[in-house]
Image 1 (cartoon, helix red, strand yellow):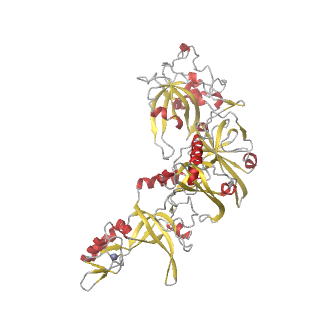
Image 2: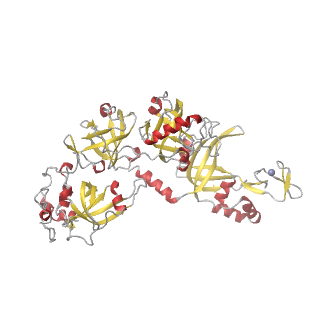
Image 3: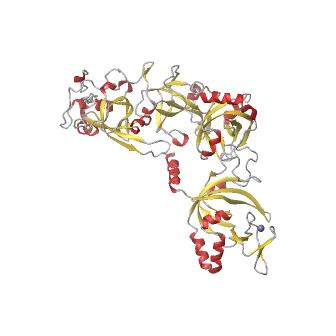
Length: 624
Ligand SMILES: [Zn+2]
């Protein structure tokens, strides 16, 4: 293996502003001085690695592109490894020049020590920065460190030194070309470079969305793009919609150039890229017919019978035979108060189970209902716990009808031979035991218990729509527990719970069981006032909720009360100032001609602080 580094290449690479002028790999042999793991702030993003790279004269900060992290994790590179940089980008990140390493090869096991006495490239810029871009810095011995001017020459290759000023060298190897333009990996895009072309596959395309506000009207659409380095979202406004909406088709590969790179608005995207693309008037898009090197959409299918192992609100990929296609109909969205078209599909797979999946908007309107038992692969659909488990498309979800993939052929074979016999009679997910399930069957994919603040629950009028209850969940603190009528004496026989009356002889009688007992079992009928940062509300809860909130059985508490009212009040006081996640059923209640909404706790769990903080961090990050 070589132990000779490409002296001066760090300087040349760090100065690269035009990807077509990259330093060729054979002249970019560097040593890794350190590797540091940067823990992901977003759990979906995964960890990344910061690397300090040396060419023997200079060292500089570099980030390993996320798709390369396996080479650290498998031990292929380590501290003091000598590597060849095959592809890179130089970006300005928060005022610093950072090399993004997009491709590299290890040239053997790590050395025992570092080569030379490299100095910080960034500092050498500040100290003698007047050298300009003509490669002067590289040829200048840095702070007395001995450069190795003949290092490359002894390999039969010219040393870099100052002989090849950055920016004038013609491309030898490196990025591939499309119509003469250099192809740039998505991961290397940044607002600091404007000469680039990407070659990417459209993995999803939105509908055309219209808006109108005080400043005028407009329309937009967006696509998600994929290449082997990563993913990025691209959006076109107005004229760009007319120009590109029909050209860009899902699953096809395109050359895209001369568009703007902006900071991503993450609240409108499900990708982790820091940046996104906006198509401009000058943007050029051309379909690419040689797409073999661009990855296809990768599916990680979850068999239908395993969907109950996926948490509600997560996304997953699902493939199935469409057993039945519902009618499309228009509903008013509760949150936006706007009409939206929906259509439900029933999908089944070899597991013998079926699940409902809801299509929305244009996808629902234009779905070809005449298809005969199509196989559909869905990417990134939302899992909900309505009806046990059901699915719903997001705007970023994709749907491929009769895709040419092995899983689809397997399903087709199964369905035509066995599955069709069970058509319409597949097993379904049972409801989770709460009332009102399956009623109407028209809510596949919507979570029974979406998170609300107290103010939202009231503003949206949850529970006020008549007979049908609404479900939501919320995080709130118990402020007060009502002392009166906190529990009642119940029949102690199993599954009865009927209120019992004390007889003259002191025994307790249950009408239903027609029996008397020496003592009743007290059960909670809790009324608690809870509060969050928006408002307060009264909740009612039955025995299990009371036991959780108060921390003892109602019978135990009744005993305390009989002994000391003070101690009883103290127990209830201790139960306040605690935060819980509440699942709530909201339903109208009529009493003495008064109609009001009653909020009943169906489930309460103590707050998982770590999970809750991560959730908040994600919500905050979506605003950044
Ligand atoms: Zn009874």
